[in-house]
Amino acid sequence: MEFSSRKLDDVVLAVPVGQIDHPNAQQLQQALTPILDDPSAGKTALVLDFAGVTYVSSMGLRVLMVAAKQMRSRSARMAVAALQPVVAEIFDIARFRHVVEVFPSVRDALQALSAPALEAYDASR
Image (tube, rainbow, N blue to C red):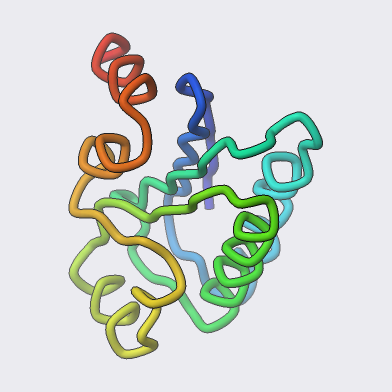
């Protein structure tokens, strides 16, 4: 699994790519830890761009659930965007849309979470 992230004003856009299965779930957790544990983050939102995620296992869902809980504890929002059909089906079966906000695209997520972040995203494209 590959992972990259960047800050867009008051939102961190994180981009995992590949399968988030049992072996890769720990990698995702390690990649998210600096973002989730940043004491200066405050209410900085987190958007996960899942366009490149081809599968997510129960372990991957657990990592997302823990991350969502950490975000809620600091009154920050977390969203997942651009789910592939297989991943969307897994989210539906697990009723995971009740755990994190889900949007059809990164742009839609940013539009809902932060106008300044959307502006920064559009400017960087």
